[in-house]
Each structure stands twice: as structure tokens, then as C-alpha cells.
Amino acid sequence: MAKKIAAATTTIPPLYGRVREILDAARGNIARTVNTTQVIANWLVGREIVEEEQQGKKRAGYGAELLADLAARLKAEFEAGYGVDNLELFRRFYLEYPRLLPEQISDAARRKSGHLAGTAANSETVRRNSEALQQFPLPSSHGLASGVPLPPGQLSANLSWTHYRTLLRVSRSEARDFYEIEAIRNAWSARELERQINSLLFDRLAKSRDKAGLMRLAVQGHEITRPIDALKDPVVLEFLDLPESPQLVESKLEQALIGKLETFLLELGKGFAFVSRQERITLDGDHFYIDLVFYHTVLKCFVLIDLKVGKLTHADLGQIQFYVNYYDRERRTEGDNPTIGLILCPDKNDAVVKYTLGEQQERNIFTSRYQLYLPTVEELEDELRRELRFLSPLPDKAKIKKDSKAPAKPKKNREQS
View 1 (spheres, rainbow, N blue to C red):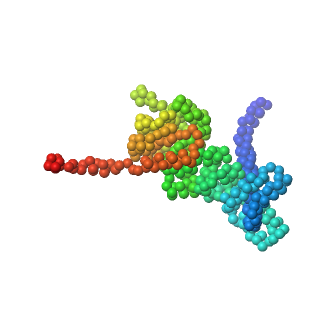
View 2 (spheres, helix red, strand yellow):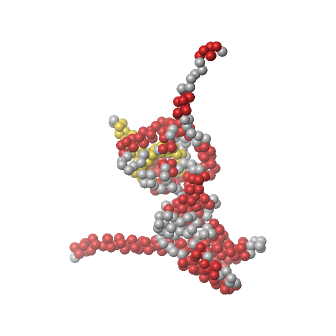
View 3 (cartoon, helix red, strand yellow):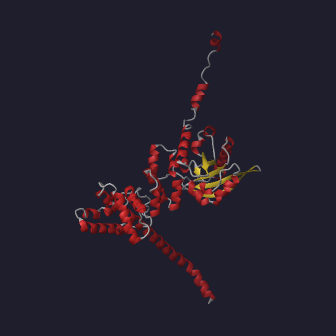
């Protein structure tokens, strides 16, 4: 009997795994369906409010009176969730996302009811809203099945009402579009989306881009084609809850990052995979240790991170160059691209970085400031102005060489003068 039970036990796991997968998928689809239905309902409520306001917009105070009356009636029947503040949010939601639903769904019934009036028009409005709720498809990966996400501003089953409510806090349309694209692409939770907005991710990535690059960022999201595209400056580490203190040591900073590795990976951005910490290099009996080693799955290369708690020096830059050169010669394998080196430091002299690294600064060695608190827009603007002073190209070596060979003024002319 025991043997039969044991045999049965060995045959259950595969079946259990398949059944569990089905139930988990169903549970996820139900949650997505509920979330998306709530998003559609809130958008439709917002549309009704806007259309009603437009009919009475000539009356002073009509909108406030309308929302107060509607909130009182809804509270009596639906209790919480439909106060004046939320109704105003639904109104904003419709105005900011006028094309949330496909036109054939949101406008078909509207065209049919265009000539109706009174009770007939009201019942037709109810019917068209019901159709909108029932007809919209709710696949689990809406807009991503083909690998090409929907343009921003269209309904995604991967965004809950909490996501959209968070996005409405972003006033600039280009920034909001960026966060919407990235939230869908990276499956950010609402909390992760809020953290990226609070850390001004869009502004930090936009710092190193021209106007065309800024537009691509807003329309296509964060695309990585070069090493510099994968890096942020500054890197925001407020999640570590470490005080700014001269007593902070590199080992404590490293331990704090490892302790919250998942959040650190979120801050680093997509493509980063953790490999090791304190990676040892031994050369002729001398030992050296690389603080953090990652592999970037998009750029197909190792990323070596060196942590500093003081202002960056030229010796620090020489150290990261040594690590990068070693990895390229000893650890890099076929198919890997050149190794990237990144120094995270609280402060740096951009001129020292520019003249120490030269052209290598644009290829595979980078420096970024880190902050232990969330930045402000003003701080990013100051950072951008500081960097712009160092964007002029290095002196042309050929020109310098040519100038150095220019004939000196004849000595006899100086003697004759």
C-alpha cells in the first residue's frame, strides 16, 4: 500500500504543476479583467461628466454643482469611492486619455444616439456605455502579443486604475507617455511606477539627449542601443535609508545595495543581471576586488561597478580602467561585447573625468553620481548646466601635433629687433 501511495505521489507533481498553471493564469486573468473593467468604468463616468458639463458650460459654477449633486446621489447607493474628488479625477482621466478605447467601440453607439433626446437619449447612453464595458477585449498581454506595444494613451490590460491614477500626477504629456510605456513593458507594479516617477527617471534619462532623442524617449520608451543608454546620472539610492554621513564606508554601502538588490536592479534599469560581489582578481600574488559585477542582457557585456564614498579622483578612474582591461582579456568570451566600467560616487569633477578618460569616456567607462535621497527638478537642471560646460570636444590631436611643428620665430629676427 505504501508503495502505491509513493508511486501515486511521484505521478502527481506533473499533473499538479499543469493544473496549478491553469488556475494561476485564470486567477491572473480574473484580476486583470476586474482591474480593466474598473478603468473603463471610470473613463466612461468621466466622459459622461465632461459631456454634461459641455451642455451647461455657460452657467457659472455648473461643474462644481454637477459633481456635488452626482457625488451625493452615488454615495447613497454605492457608498465609498465616488466622492467629489474621485469624480473630478475620473473627469481628468477622460480629458487626458480621450482615445483610451478604440473609436469603433466608444463612438459607435454615440453616432446611433446622436438624434435622440430626453429619456430615449438617456437609455441609449446607458446602452452604449454597457456595450463599451462588454465589447472591449481583455487579453492578458493586450498590446504586447505581437511584441509591439500600443501607442501611449490607449487602454492596456496590464495597467490597473492605481497605475492610471499615478500617471495622472505627471503633468507633462511626454513624461507621462514615457512612464506609461515603461510600466507596460517592464510590468511595473503601481508602487514601482510611483517610485520611478518620484525619482524623476524620465528627466534623468533625458539629460543626455537632444530634442530628437527626447521625442524618441516619449514615443518609444527607454531603448538601449549604446552603453550610455543603459546608465543614469544621478543614480538614486533613497531606498537604502542611509544617512548622508562622512562616516559612510564603501563596505556598508555595498552591503546595503546587496540587501536591497531587487530595488537596486529596478533603479539600474532593464537588462542588468547580478553576477557577483567582491570579485577577486589575482595577479602575481596581488589581490584586487571588484565591488559589483553585473551582466547586461541587452548590450551583451559585463558591467563592473566600483563604489566610492568620497569625491572621485583620477586614481579611481585608473582603477576601473584596470578592471575593465582585465575582464576584456581574461573573462570576456565569444559573443560578449566590450566590458563596461561604472564608478558610482557622491561627487566628481567632470573636467578630471574628461581629460583622464578622453575618448574612452564615450565608449566603455562611465561615472555617475549617486544620491541617498530623491532628487528635485531644480537639482537635475543644475546638474545639466554643470555637464554642458564639459561637452565641448577634446582638442584635436592632429591639430596640436601640427601646431607643435610650426616653425618658431627666427632667432636672428629677435636679435635684430
